[in-house]
Length: 444
Length: 175
Image (tube, rainbow over all chains, first blue to last red):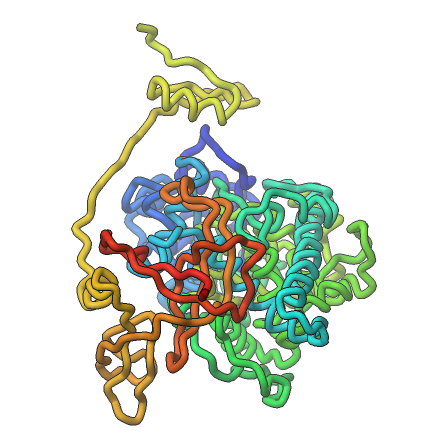
């Protein structure tokens, strides 16, 4: 990767349609690399999630011609919530296969074009329309079903195992899980105060998050990402071209993709596919993935780690930008990606590992800086214009590895100290598809 | 009639104006003006339940049907039916599921998609059945958020005037 760019993510960008948003992000990306001109780009991969939001079929073709890319090759990428992450990997594949030397990955979404609850309906159409959607088709509801079970597996059967009364034990566990989830939300909103691209930078307390409106028990508004308008682009090329364009390239050293059943009801109850640092005896009593964990995230992580030669993720990754559409799914994803064992996600937050050093979150984070997760603010604070989101993560990770966060954000607070390797993680449909890509500093 | 629709500086006012008159101008903080119009879209699909048909016809008869793999060595039972086995790929046969089950997980939705907002709050539950290897997503009625817990025993109720939708079955706490 040699450059990237994005628009600010916002509730609405009424003065820009999707073509102009992508153009702005694209111009920003190219401005930073004088040798990289439009004629050097061999083709594109363009992503957006929903034709319902766009109400313009073949919208990717309109981006292609607005950017002046005709008659070069292009493909539209769609993979639910993981659309942007998949687009990043499609561009990687175009280059890795030898088909292109230089490929532009561009993504966008314009979700402001319908009211919020209609937008939720469009998103819910990405659940089975025979068996799931007619029951109340609502993604927050599906993720709530998952976290209620996650809390049961790991807090009810863990910290609250001794409580005799079943209902009482489950209520206590949910209250504890909700409190810890809220810390994730505080973290991501707080980090975003230093990210000018973020939609909802905010200084919040755990109480603020818990007291915000109940959307689907136990998930509150403060634990959920919002709908956004936005665009993001990344330019990927061969190593040879990369050296020509910049002295600070970033190498894509691993890509992984996993899937799971569309319906939560069909998820199996089997064994955990183990990462190198895990043992089968860690999970003897665990039926996996059930509805508590994302097997697709584990599969994507396994593939990407293997390709990049990573055997101990927390020791070998300096940060992760992951798909926190819900505070709950950020915690579930820690476990899928092996940042801690299954069942240790809540404690991972309590110990402070995913927090940044030097930022005051309003509570104690003893191990802050150990494994920064979503230093940018993630989806919860940056927004989630679906087709752009996975590419946004790519751009933030790229700037982190280049050491140019300060330059692009106008504020160096979120710049990590010489990160060498990071991961981006993009996730769709209650975990029906997930991508993980590993990015590394490609210069000394 | 004015040649220019009304100008708004707050985006949320635009939607109200569109409902009223169908057009508005939004002026942003940089003074850039965008003409915004109402753009409706409605369509009825010709939707076949195809191989899932026996499940939906079963609900109309007050029967809850799953499916079971025909391969003797597999025999996997799906509580949400599918006509081919996800485990081994063999065809399945239709079976009657028990009408009693247990809550595997649950939530209460206080908001929902536009189509379901008027029904809020409603409970969703994934139900597990004895003898089945997968779950069924249902609405859980006649109980409040504070009554619900994992492991709760529940039983099926059927819509007497079928709508030929998965909502023709719902569950209630077992008496």
